[in-house]
Image 1 (spheres, rainbow, N blue to C red):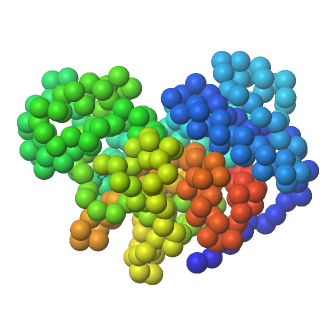
Image 2: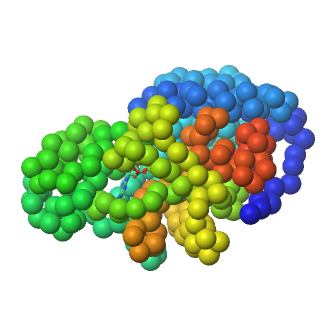
Length: 313
Ligand SMILES: Nc1ncnc2c1ncn2[C@@H]1O[C@H](COP(=O)(O)OP(=O)(O)O)[C@@H](O)[C@H]1O
Ligand SMILES: [Mg+2]
C-alpha cells in the first residue's frame, strides 16, 4: 500500500506556526500530549513553531504571536468541534484539518449518522434518548445490545454498554451529564477497525483488539493489553472496501486534510461506521502515526504532511 506525498515546501516557507493544544475540553490531557509531540516534530524539522495552551485569552495570544498558520492539536469540545476553526477563519489565519462546518458536524455523532444514512453509508441502528424515553421499547428495537453515548463527546467519556432494560435509564443519565443530546446505538458484534485519512488518501486500516467490553478510555490511553494490528488482517478486497467507505464518509461530512474514521465489522463481514475524528490523537502511540508508519512516513514526516496539506486550503 502506498501514499503519495503532497509537494514539499521549505521549512521557513511555513512562517511562524502556532500549535494549539490543551484547551478546556474533557480531552485536555490527551491534547497536551498530542500538541507537545507535534511541536517537537515541527521544531525538529526546522519549522518556527510556538506552542499555545488554549484558554479564554486565545484571541489576544494569537494577535500577539501573529502566526502565519495554525496546527490544531485540540481534541473534543471547543477545539475539534468547529469553534476554534471559526475563530481562525474570522482572524484570517489558515489552519490544519477540517473547516468549522465539517468539524462541528463530525463532532456530533447524531448529525454524522444522519448524513451518512442520507448518502447510503452503513452505520448502526440507533435511537435518540430523552428523559421520557420508553426504555423497554428502546431495548427491544436495538436487540438488547446497546451503546449509550453523549453525541458531542470523545475518548469514550460518558459512554456505557447496556444489555438490560433496568440499566438503560442510569446510562442515559450518565451520558446526559456530558451533553444535552444522547443516543442509544445498537452494538455491532465483531472486529473493530480504524482508517486514517491524509490529504485525500486512506492509509492502511488498523484492527483494534481489547479485552475490555469496548475500546473505553482505559483501553485507549492506559492499558498495555490493547493490541493494534497493522496490517489489519483483512483481505486486499476488504481493505479496499473499508478504505473506500472511509473516504466517502470523510467527504460526505465535508472533512479536509486529515482525520480518522472508526468502524465495526459484523459476523457477516459487513462494515458499519461509528464516528469521524477530525483531530485524532497525535501522540507517538496514537493510531494515525501508526498507520502512517506503515506507508513509510515517520512521525515528523506525518506532522509535516498535515501542515503542508493546510497550505492553499
Ligand atoms: N455500536 C457499537 N458497536 C460496537 N462497539 C461500539 C459501538 N459504539 C461504540 N463502540 C465501542 O466504543 C468505542 C468508542 O465509541 P466511539 O463511537 O468511537 O466514541 P468515542 O468518540 O468515544 O471514540 C469504540 O471504539 C468501540 O470499541
Ligand atoms: Mg472513537
